[in-house]
Image (cartoon, rainbow, N blue to C red; front, side, top):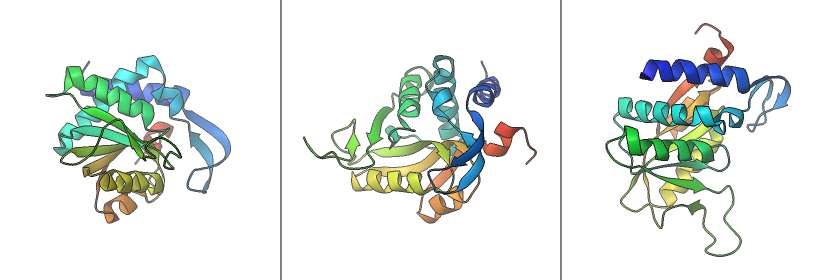
Length: 189
């Protein structure tokens, strides 16, 4: 399938599986009558290759050639896996994955970042399922930088367009998205 076909099919899956209506409190603390439960799509087997390929295409369009992709557990976990796996067939080199804990592990090595021994000398792109204010993405960027990564940018599957881009860019990191919430809702703009 073409990149456009992948985007159309992924959008259809997100719309059918992940857009929920009701009264919700978002991770940012904001209230919303629309909730995007992206995990219902990112953990759906037919969507996984589409997600990986769409993220790879967006990275290529931005000129980002990371050594690794990662993000905050749990929203980023299936995206990291999809991108890393699809890099074997759809990128010029394999891209490793890493996961960032919200809190350091209280035992073992007590690390925030898992999946690689170090980020020293490596470039990374941070991935996220949904971005609202950008707080979770900024936390992931900070942890990745502390681990030694040179963070090229961040990409969200869905951008709610509520200040996340601006906050992430103010933190010194480029930002992109696969879809906006308006696209998921079929609204213009």
